[in-house]
Image 1 (tube, rainbow, N blue to C red):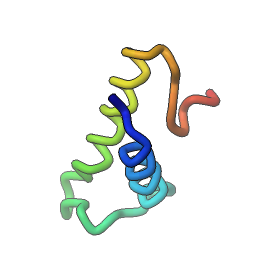
Image 2 (tube, rainbow, N blue to C red):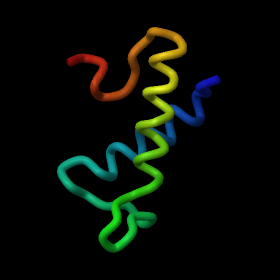
Image 3 (cartoon, rainbow, N blue to C red):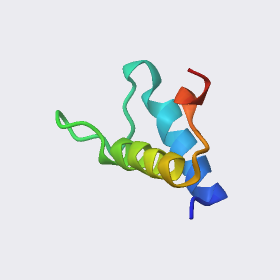
Image 4 (cartoon, rainbow, N blue to C red):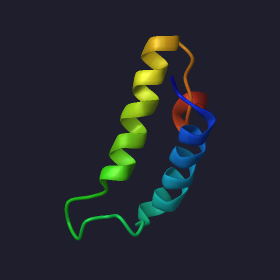
Length: 59
């Protein structure tokens, strides 16, 4: 189940990466696994509940 803590953590991660920003966990060239996990969790939540979440929900 997608918890409030996970959602808050995902939103924080997404904000750190807006506009090409990087978080402390970003690898030098490979990208950020934290951001990938947040996106996958949002996709899983959407497919299981049918309720979109995250920044793409308004598109």
